[in-house]
Amino acid sequence: MFPARPFEIQPRPLPFERVVKWLPLDDSYYLLASAGMGAVAEPVVLAQDALLQVEHDLRHTQHRDAFGILSGAICICPDSGLQYVLVEGTMDARGVAIGDDPYATMAAELSALARTAERSGKLVVGWYRTGATLFPRVALHDVAVHRTLFPHPWQVALLRDGIGPQNRGALLRVEPTEGRPYSIPFYELLPPPSKYGTGITGASVTWSNYRAELEMTPAPDALLNGRVAPSRPTPLLPPSVQPAPRANGPADAAASARATMEPPSPFAPPIFADTPPPNAASAAPP
Image (cartoon, rainbow, N blue to C red; front, top):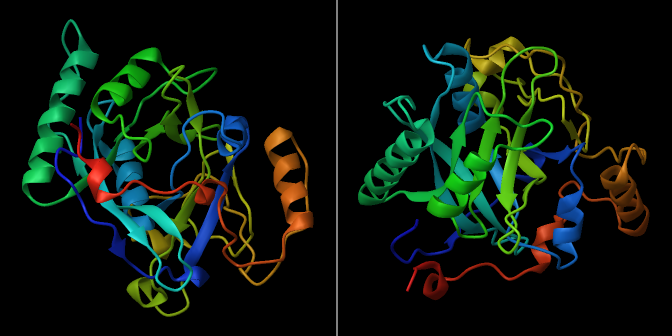
């Protein structure tokens, strides 16, 4: 169970002009969680470099499945007061989930990797896996791994099923009482334009089961630094543009209703923000 030691909530400003909110299209359970039914925790901000590294593992590993640890921090934005989970790095497992019980092998590798990460001063905020089953439902073994090794309500699993026109991905949390996995919205933190060249901005998520809440310019290949080529254009608008409401399902309908009641904001408070975050005293297991 990680983390094994108390941690501090770090003050880190969020560059609101460089965040893109992604919403799951086929799983609206997070709306119930936000209303008090299930595990409610801080919103998640994924640094684009961490997302791209998982995509790199998906496309370039010699084996079908790659997996590893997500590292980061529990943060608070001094300007807005927003408390969030920041995923800013990955640590890939060198072993391969093979043998009579591949899930047991994967769990052992993840456990060892998480302890190594903690010894180096990193906070384990979750894990990732490629080659996962996401449709019609997440594999029970993946849920078991998450609940056993990453039981804190703010920890997440980043699962990817493959590449191609219908490739899917999910940022998951698990409802602690019933053990139900569900996709959650998340924020992609784009790198500074100067990192890849002046004026180059764009999102990297190409999952068919998520959509951007705001729309901007598609990311050019140069943004991905030669590591990942998007399988489809990513629709994005400048953060100052308020999108027109759309309702393609329960999640979209609720989001549209919220948009009609709340003032426009380039970084609207996420649905999980109403719940107090974990503190240093409660983060360590008894």
